[in-house]
Length: 90
Image (cartoon, rainbow, N blue to C red; front, side, top):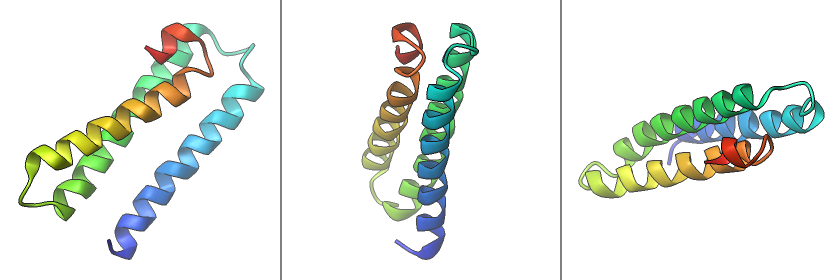
């Protein structure tokens, strides 16, 4: 991986940490529907960004890069969504 890939993965990790910290701090002020939208947006952004990165890394195997990006997006969405409740994690 080159420095560009590390930059994007680091940005996604920083975004996840900030959302977790702010979500824990303002959990009582954020409605459940907004928490669900936040977790869906984060998982979609993570999955698409990881898909582009893994697609450029594993050019010969589209299935492998798709599977990795979907797994990363689902994991990120669940980790963010669990802060706001069970419905947001689903």
